[in-house]
Each structure stands twice: as C-alpha cells, then as structure tokens.
Image 1 (cartoon, rainbow, N blue to C red):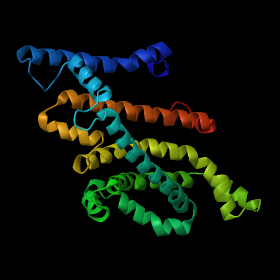
Image 2 (cartoon, rainbow, N blue to C red; image 1 turned 90 degrees about the vertical axis):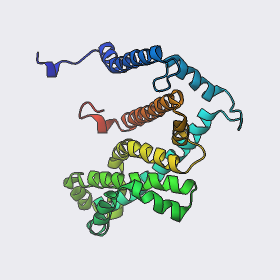
Image 3 (cartoon, rainbow, N blue to C red; image 1 turned 60 degrees about the horizontal axis):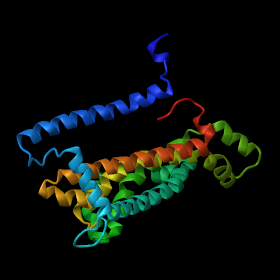
Image 4 (cartoon, one colour; image 1 turned 45 degrees about the horizontal axis):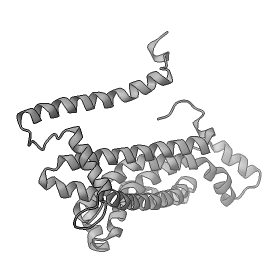
Length: 273
C-alpha cells in the first residue's frame, strides 16, 4: 500500500501530534540548562520550574499594588476585545458578503472598495483610529474589525458566488423572490463558511489585538507582555505567549467542533483541518 493511503490509528495520531511539542520542550530544557549552568542569574531562558512558579503567582496571587490576579484580569480584558471585534466583523461579513455575492448591483457597488480596503495594512490605520476614536476600547476593537472584516467579507462573498447556479434557477422557477432565495437558499449554505471565516480571522485578530494593547492599554495580555519586556522578564513573557496560544487553539477547535456538529452536511467531502 502506498504511503499516501496509510492512515494512523487514533493512538498513533495522538502520539504524532504531541511529538513536536515534546521535542520543542526537550530542546528548550537543554538550552535553558546550558545557559543556567554558566550563569544561574540568566534571564533569557528561564527554567520550566521558574516559569511555572511565575505563572502560578500571576494566576492565583493578588498583585501587591492593585490587588488583582493579573493573569485573569488580562485574559478577561483581551477576550472581551477579541470577542466583540470578531462579533462585529462576523456580522458585517454576513450582510455585506451576501450583498456582494448575491446581487450583481451590490457586487458592482462594493466589491472593488472591499478589495482595495482589504489591501491596506491595518496596523497603519491604528494612528487614525487613535485620533478619531481616542485611546479607548473603541480604537482597539476598531483595529480588529478593520483587520479582519474585509477578508471575511470577501470569503463569504466568494462562498455565495460558489453556490450552484442551478439552485438559484430552480428557486426562481418555483416563484421565489430574491428575498426568499437569499433567506432560504443562500443563507443556510453560508453558515459553515461564516464559522470558517471566523477561524481564519482569529490569527490576524490576535495580531492586531496584541499590537493595539502594546501601544495604548492598561490591561490585557499584550499590554502585560510589552510591559515586562523592559525588565527582560522572560519567565512572564513565555508563559503568557503559551497561554495566548492555548486560548487561540481551544477557540479554533471549539469553532471547528461547532461547525461539524451543527452543519454535518458541510463536512461530507473528507478530512478538514
């Protein structure tokens, strides 16, 4: 049997999935041990035990000055901004994506603008947002929307355009109006695509969130990382980066599970990431 036709068992797949993480951890431990052996006060590669202890303090001990448990305070602030920004982007992409993909006049009106707008590097818009929306929550959420909505709109519009033309013709033959076709033919078919667009938007959303928090914020995961970098506090930075990665990974997996459970018909073509 060809190698391309061989599939690993569930146990083997789990082992192979964990293997890169284990190798990375081993490499880090070896490098950290070597540096700490030369200089016990080295901050660049702290030991795993040091990072675990720092993470415990950030998560479960109250901060001396504020009295807050900083990890949960930062996590709640970042997730609030991320969730609200993605919710606004998803809502915009749903309506505008259908408008562009379903109506030729809508496509002629907005498609060139969205295409051009999606090419603007969002981080360059940040100073404008800070001037217009001031250094508040609106500017940070606005950056997430600016950075994710155009790509999600284009993705959903393309999904609408990919719906077989025969379905539209059959619905019109049966007397359906444009509004009825949009609601009963188009809308049900793009829900899985909307979830996929949100999953794809998670990566730029995190990038823009961290960037905005690094520049103007008093709480948040990005704010904490850039606050402690001036002290070379790698025992805080590395666990925070790992924590962000874990949150992003779990969010992606939950969205994928939601799509598979709610829209089984959209996952009949084979394996998907």
